[in-house]
Every structure is written in C-alpha cells, then in structure tokens.
Amino acid sequence: MIEIQIGEGFVGSGPNAAHTNTVLGARSGPAGVAWATALATPRAGHVPFMVIAQTGVAVTPPTLFVNKAAIEGDQHGLFTWGAAQAGVAAGVADALRNGVIDTNATNDLVIIAAVWLNPSANDEEEVFSNQRQAMLDALTNGKSGKPSAADVMKAAENVANPFFRQK
Image (cartoon, rainbow, N blue to C red; front, top):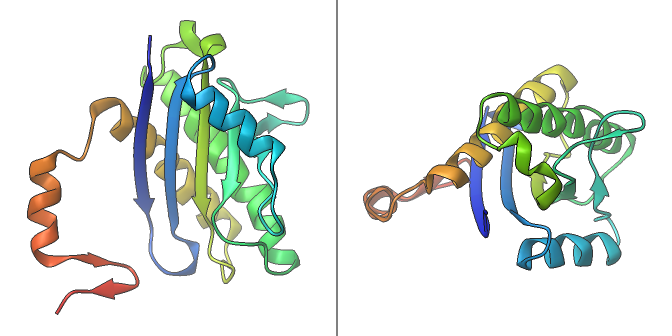
C-alpha cells in the first residue's frame, strides 16, 4: 500500500502554463488527514474542492483541487473551476489508464492537487491541455521518486524557474 507520494509537474509557458504539486497517499494515513483538513478549512480566495470528471462523477481516487493563486476576477475563476479542474480530472484518468495509479487501490487512496493558474490565463484549451499533462507528470514523478537527489544538486548549480534565473 502507498504511504505517500509527492510529485511535481510544470508544463507550458506564459500565462497558460500549469504548475502542479501532488500528494497521493492512503485515505487512512497522513494524506487522508491532510485531504480532509484542507477541505474543511477554506480560506478567503482559496476554497479547496473535489474534482469531477462530469457533473455527478467525482474523480477517483478522490482528488482535492487546491488553488495556489487566489481567484482574481470572473475569467480566472471560470478557468480555475473549468479548464484547470477538467485538466486535473483528465490527468488523473490518464494516470489510472497508464498504470501510474493502481485502479484496484482507488478506494484506499486520496490525491491533493495544488494547482497554479495564472490570473492572466487567456486560453482555456491551452490551460486544460497543460494542466492535464502537468497532473500526469506530477503523479508519475511521485510514483518514480523523481527528481533524484543527484538531479536536484545538478540543477541547483544554475537555479532557474519561469520567474527567476540565477546570474
């Protein structure tokens, strides 16, 4: 049984990029406690919610969407609850389909997805596509234990992200 897997995925560039962090773990373990606690303790601008694949069809394992950026305006809200949520749902389904998550274990697991969606996002199809891949990448990386310590040490020789580059 999975105790806990932590993963990260970043896909795309510009305002429609997706940066997703995941926690996959046992409902009866620390991941389950964190899942329930996050759902029960919303904060202004950050209201965790269960991801659905369609109305009335919650994703399994139960997946909690936690927005890393506070909702800023109608379009950002619609993209968060629409395209980004749909991307998370599709990414989980891809992980199930590809064997990243054991379909026989879904009743014993939960997922927390912390999702960055830029308030300036402007293309819902690109948001969906990037988020779908970022979710799958995060779950895949969590399962395989990536990145390795060696990968981190090498990358840290020239730290860079979309908002900063070491000189």
